[in-house]
Image (tube, rainbow, N blue to C red; front, side):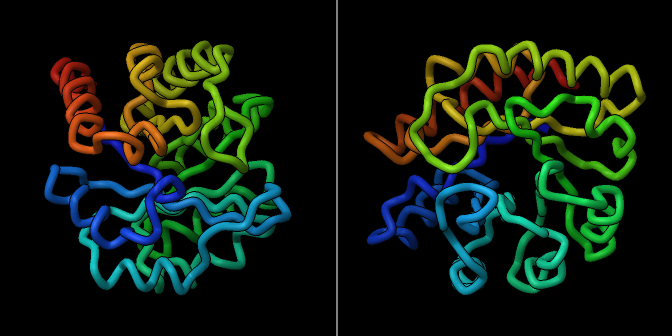
Length: 224
């Protein structure tokens, strides 16, 4: 599965409904929603009321990224708010296996996120609980950061490990510094879901979306 997941963190909130509708008209299927609590990361972002509000108006697949402490407390609430996929940080979960199981039991796709310095070994025993792994390609908490080049090999190594273990269908999502200069780099390494913020919402959105659509189509043609 190859998808672009525009990051709502970079949207113009004066025109949020208009921009989300535009994404749908342009053929986008996913929306990446960062939930930040000011503890796990320095910033504070969207909460449940915002997600509920846009859920009523949007048909996009809600890819909710929980950058919070104790994410297990919010699993059922996020399902009720309209999340289609819930991604939790391995660094924030005391009982990661149990948390991922509860996400699936609630009827959502389950994802686990790793910060740049977190080793891949931290998730090797929960592959069977996963639909997706999110590799942070910047340090989390702020938009507009530059891609960390060392993450290219991390993407490549994760794809190799998942395939070798028989989990070819587990997607790899990348988040941070994804733009026209880095899209091919991460796709070639094995990523299939690209989170992009300013590279989508700044400038000519139609042209930006066309670029990502063409790059994703070029890689998805080979299948995986």
